[in-house]
Image (cartoon, rainbow, N blue to C red; front, side, top):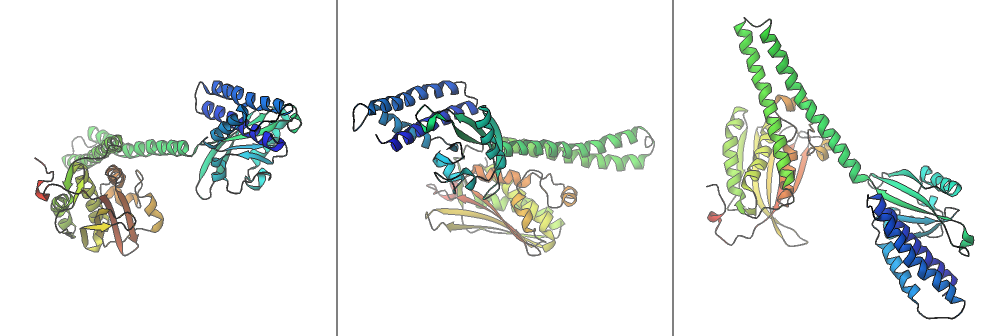
Length: 426
């Protein structure tokens, strides 16, 4: 075996060993160090043994060579980026995950060419100086924002391999999802607390007033009781929406299995929302010819259509018209047919910077207007999760001063039974 090949095999084996050990230990697996130790015995035993035998007899294949291949395969299948550098911070070995994260990464080139992170580069020097492992953070914002914990450790080399001097292995653990989840949780708790605190403070204030100065003032008592009722209803809506959202999220991974006709659901909800539209001077219409069957949960789909129409009437009603339409469309790539439910208003529209955040919990374009309309800030979040459960897509299009269109697109159900036999309420 040539010297370069032996060194490459040793490198792959060692990086795979360290990477798997750190990978397991970094995720809280109690057997991580044991796995690493076992792989060290298997991989290094074959490598060192083959190095010793190479001086005595030449062989075409050896058990060590197969172990090297296994080590390289293990390295390639470690899902997190692993990078091995020498004492000059020149890249010796990387796995595919590292190449995907850092496309500019090249063997025998300085790591700084691809990874411009002073904390990481300084950490390599510190590990070489002290021999003690350390952890640091690395963040990237292009093409998307991601955060990594970089675990840096010295990698002792046997005598005879690069002079016995240690190299350094870097293991990057992706923290992006965990950080986003934590930020979402903190925002949710803060927003929910704020939304409940405001009506509670109003109720407490009016109760104290009724018990004190307004005790013998019937007109003031009637006015205060009306305000208290409004605030209590606001809290009830918020609690109902939170419970609905929680139930939907629990079942989001379970797709519906019962066919329903989206036409009947749309027409029923247009009739239900008719009085609200007339009170606000809005003409509400529906365009749907024939049956549009999909696999769905009827109550959840009613909630989707209700929320979309109600939002269009309340926030886009100044345009005077709200149109609900159903149509089929065929995807060019797959040839599959889907059903599109579109709700369009002709109101003031929404600025482009708000559209990506409209389905976030408690996000409002105009907080004061939303509260005046009785909104909780959870309607579109509920719609998004219901559409996801039905394996659909939610698209929002809006142009300032030209109205807003919200489209919910679902896979069509190829009905075996006639449309009038599709699931309807008992």
